[in-house]
Image 1: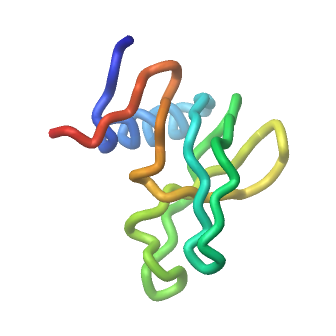
Image 2: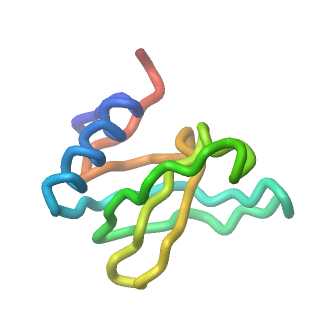
Length: 94
């Protein structure tokens, strides 16, 4: 299976979003406040939203802010929990 490094995947997401396209991704879920996990989130059509600042959102630098086109919702996930991007396995290896 083809893989892609986490920050390279995020850079491609930004490029796709800037060009008006969408991408697919799978990420694990985790709510740090409640310490709950609800398995994997499959997102068929997503676009990135502007990154929040750490002054507005706690740990914003470690989160990925996106819009789920099919659900019509603004969502976010922890960047290290990104598992797949456009069918490629996301790795945190340099």
